[in-house]
Every structure is written in structure tokens, then in C-alpha cells.
Image 1 (cartoon, rainbow, N blue to C red):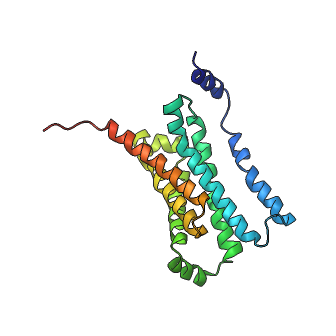
Image 2 (tube, rainbow, N blue to C red):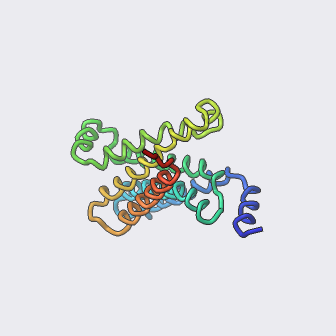
Image 3 (tube, rainbow, N blue to C red):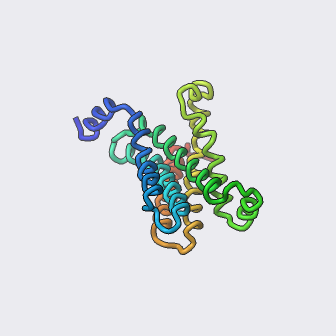
Length: 206
């Protein structure tokens, strides 16, 4: 038995549900910091950035599942749903922090900011694209839609990842290393999927 087979055999015994409470740990730590003054001089901005960054981390983690299986034989497919839903949760928290604590429901200011700051529009679009993904991340949706249609719908993950990475880059503005690394990771992971899709395409003959 290979190492990958041994790891997969052990992973099959581990349920996916512990990933949900584990995914809440960063938010729990941020909440504790919020009430103890550990988020710096602008805690709302720090909370916005951190929740958005954790959302992007989980999105990238979800994109890594397929390359990991193809290159090493280790399958984390059973955990991908939990990873994706945790990513959606952090995107939602990120949006709610911005809407309630930052903008304080000032709809006129929100509209003006969306026109002035493209990164807000990109973030909103990513959130909207994630709504059908979260709503159909269950076995009932797979049965109703059919595996093929469900798979096509969940390709929305790809533009979500790209929008999230560009959103992060534009938010930071100063072009530091971290957002560029995340954007490069997302572009590389999406490029791999394009290459694999082309390899699966039948060759046309004249």
C-alpha cells in the first residue's frame, strides 16, 4: 500500500463536521481581541481585513484540493464542502462588519463608495456569486440538479476566487507582497484547471 493510500484510508475514518467548529476559531480569536483592545488603533478596519483574508485563505484551500489529489493521490474531497461553506461564512462576516460597523447602514455613502471604489463592487459581486454555491452545498441540491449541472454551477468558485484576490489587492492599495502572493496563487490554480480541461478536450480532425 502506498503512502497516499494509507493517508486516504485514515482520512476516510475522519468525519468532515469538525472542520466547521475549527473554522470558527480565527473568528473567536478576533472577537476576543476586539473586546480586549488587541486589534490596534482601528479595530473595525482590522476586523474587516482579517475576516476577508480568512475568507480568501479558505477559498484558496478549496482550490488546492484537486491539485493535491492529482499530484499526490491524497483526496480531501470529502472536506471540500466544509471548506467552501467556511469560506462563505467569512465572506458574509466580512460584508456584515463593513455594512454595520464601518458604514453603519449609511446607504447614500455606500452607494457613493461603490461608484468611487471598484474593490467594493468586486467584493459585492463575489458575495452574490457565492450565494448559489452556499445554497446548493448539500446532498439534496446535488440530487435535484444532477451531478453534471451541479458541477457546472460550482465552477462559479473560479470567478469568486479571482474576484476575491483582486478585491484584496485593491483594498490594500500599496501593492505589498501578501495580496500579490494570493493573486498569483489563485491565477496559478485557475491556470492549472484550464490546462487540464484542454487536455480532456477531444482532438478535432479536418
